[in-house]
Length: 461
Image (cartoon, rainbow, N blue to C red; front, side, top):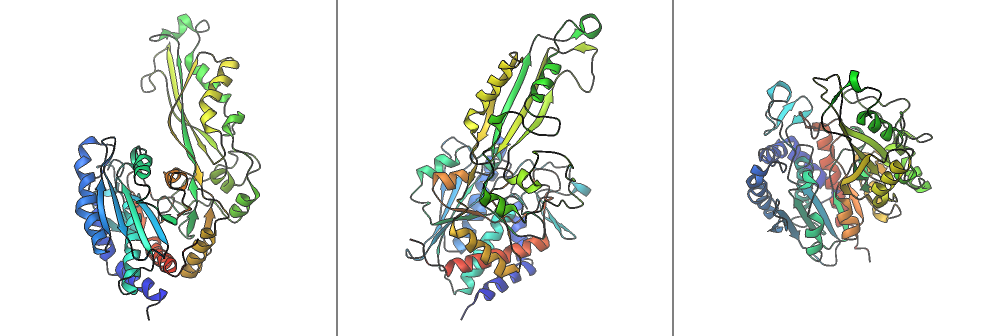
């Protein structure tokens, strides 16, 4: 009789034999840069040439869904075994950021995997081809162990526009709501808390870009002739920003802040430690909201970050007062923040406090989301991971960054469980993106155990 241990042994052999890395290498080879319009063919080919045959081998029925806005297509894969068993919906994205050819260490080719020590380099290894490949391999192992059965029903939606903000994912999911109906959402993206600790996160922080522009005049004016009698837009802009956030990253405007952290969230984060590795930046000793732990600042609080500033010519500064200055800020926020009121709130604050010349506008807004922390699926997933690894996973109320989780948690009304397979130092969105071999092997076993356990779980009414 097949056992949970059999499924884990099968997926471990798949990894140790080199087959998993061969499959990942083939997927990395598709240059699926969604930011580059000339890569539309690669986005489609990744779904049609690679993923559709891979899902067909798992007895999934698949079909392509065209983007309603003319962007990259979607793939929906559906495996139906028994209507009385639970159904899990999963997600991944086949697109990647720019390959940054020529910028990788030792001249590595971003479009093929290269193993150096414990690292597997290649664009998409961590974000997100490697992660949905792990989950597909785990499904195959469970199916093989059970003699061709999963013990549950499974669905996937793979998009090709996550790196450009998933512009029509919500519209596609709403249009195919019945087709995507499930009991539970389980997917993988982003980093785990650390190399050593498996992680579950239940949602993500939202983001709100705030553009500040001070346009006083065209061109520059000689600082010797005009200094002291002409307003300097850069000086105005710096002081405007300083009225929103202080010199230690602490927000000063109430509309930017979240509601108080709940006891349930504090309890979940009580044993979470933010401990960067030698390859990662050290934490600032005195930065961010007072009275919070680093974990609470990162996963349960908001931050206002200055992403970019521009005035004059920094490479060739002239002895002139600039006529314009601009900055782009970003509010990263958790559930409960009144983010729809942020742009108006910042504008009112600045205009009422001596900065009426600062123009305030918003862009790239996406909401925060989080599964109810009392959901029984959380303990179910944590117990499964503990049984596989012998480690208690970190349970984070939300990911520090952003993913289209709200499409699934709010749009489709599903409890969302994310099990990430990367780590914070993976260099996603940069040269030298990579995954770690030990983390990848552990992730494969985690997902094989999780999917096995789902096949042992009655459908919740």
